[in-house]
Image (cartoon, rainbow, N blue to C red; front, side, top):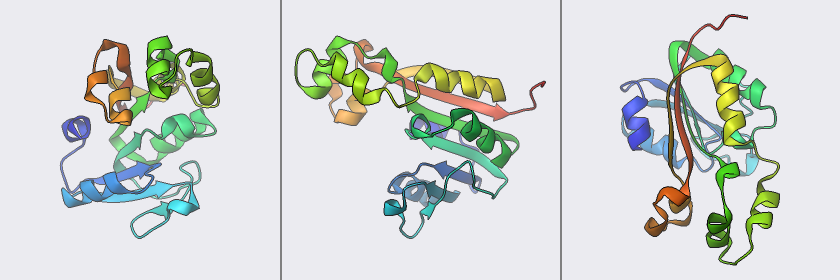
Length: 184
């Protein structure tokens, strides 16, 4: 929330939460006065306040901000998803991405994650179909003006283990981009 609170335009801005999962973040943002549309491609997650939709096919907007919080790495066509986000944003609108760069994991991280030694091959196999942090940054950079890109701790959040909040667990990316026209 610190990242979002710092970079979201003030309420009552229109916000699109892409890949919202259970919609908890959207509910928190609504409680803070934002006008939030929450979408997820998985129909099993549909509930009041969460629409079943693919960002690549979603037609609405314009939005003041589009959020991908641990969801962009799952999209099928990364470039198309980033282009769709740009099309949904108002001029000067903000793309906010909080993601994880699984390719940065080393042996210690994999072993801790699976609670077993020698887990790096399993980590790589389990994450091979997801977009890398590098690929996400490159796709966003090709379409947006990146105004902030930070590497931040990630794994401790997933495991709810503060002891992992150290340099070794820096797998996260927080990125803020502004919709601007890029030369063709």
